[in-house]
Image 1 (cartoon, rainbow, N blue to C red):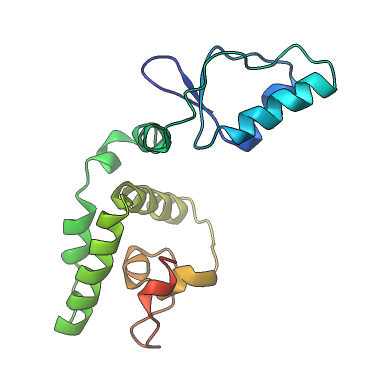
Image 2 (image 1 turned 180 degrees about the horizontal axis):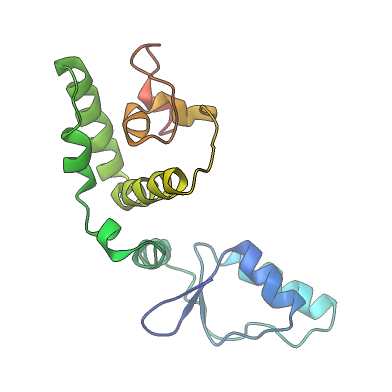
Length: 169
């Protein structure tokens, strides 16, 4: 659960379950879709809980929800300030790898996912600093050469000719 500047609570479905179980009634919540709040209120009615959310929903604006999540990344400020694009492009790579990286970075940019790269830089650094072991790679993420360069996984998608578009489906 995150707070925005206006003390509006940004929640996901798990947060709503916790609020329901603890009989917490928020003043205003922001979610990507209103149907989850409608379901929450239905269960409050069904089980006679008083924690129904009866305020005007701020959940009708998906862009507002996504912006609030991006603004509330819980990472140190210096990771938020890293130019992930520059960090990645400063890695040693061949011309072919650079072309692939540029195409992937454009996908991240087009989808508004650049802050995710900052978070992943923080996550990988934190895991390394704390000697936390993570897997070789899993799912469609191994198709991303950018994630390989950051260290999220250890599968060189260029070597295995994996299409990065699989990650962005």
